[in-house]
Image (cartoon, rainbow, N blue to C red; front, side, top):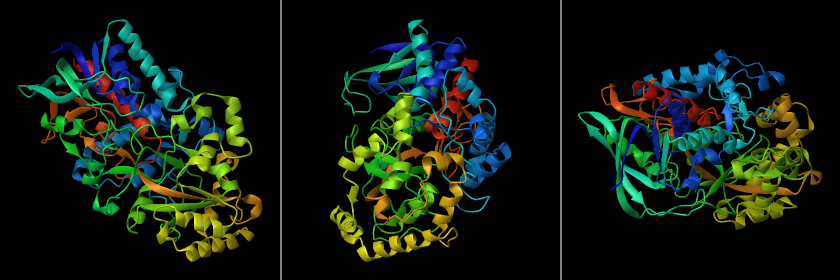
Length: 552
């Protein structure tokens, strides 16, 4: 049985784990990283991400005429989070700390590491309620130049440099099954050595154990991610406020995002809170070229598509594409069906459809300016979007509304679609286009969105009749619930120390990233403002790495 000794043990090599390791190594500590996957997965889920980051009053915002402030961002965060529980004490404090980080140090810290940002700021989670309700009042979604791999790169490089210097030990295929506790102090971990695997990044690997191991450490950081790859756990923790859990879902994260370290951490004395807070998308589509089981891709939609439930009824105000993720999820769960529909035109898909994920954005991920100009500003849908139009099981492309409805009804579950209702909704919406004023709130919001230069340039199509032949062909997309993030987790103080049932720190134990609800056990509260997941891994990983190093 292999035994290892180190200053700091990091469990999980996603972004939070890499950041924590880099910080601890910079402080002169020896670090051992363990992960149950083969090394091809270094960087974890962040590698697959779109790389969106939440900044406050950034140079990119100011250049686009966006007036943001810490006060406005705090109003949005707390209006969005809806903190209302006793256990929200530390999440509230983490939220305040993260807002300060996003306003002051975050961007400069990343720029020093060579991370750059796309000049157009996106407007995610637009809200559509009152000023104190959910949503971002202004665009804050900054896309990393290089997407997820671009965020991972500097921290991976720091870890690999530490490995070359003998200060970092990386142990792939090491699955932790227990934390070692001696006299109430966490002193490391034990678990199984899994059989070697040559699986490519994201591809599910075996769980065949061939040996056991132990690691002794002065401090242990749990950065093992959430539960989004484990549908059984998602359904177990699904809250009543979001209706009944879907019978079928697609999966937005690899299978290794399984929540296995939560009970292990709890057994060592850590308190798990807010497990019923979670973040799943309703614009998921089946990947025509899947990497992991039930692999789904999220559409990052612009605001123009007509959104219909499974029967053909239009979703109520303000549940438009890109406005309120969990509000839309709760509404759709009340319909009794697991899917919904976008109906749109070719003109809309060319301007407004982006697919989430580094692999779905070769222009941004590859830092290819020529491809970027062609895909974002040229004629036709971007290449990855066109591939889904051509091959995706959830896409219907037709020249007439009758044919489109027939194609929708031919897909699984399409038998509940009321074709007359679809026609009524689309034709009624189109009648509202002829004037510069309207009673249709979505059309009013489209015109408001185009007052922002970023939306007008690359994100929001000019308002037009969907049934106008010059804007065709017509497109329908069947949408599924796509699992993604845990918003609860291990409760931590502002030093990322795991807290026990009585609120006291568990000696020797720290947590970061999604395993800690991105800080405190739930920094987002009930809802996220987007661009805050990757950023939460950066911030909580940095805090954990520095605090553990200072304590050792």
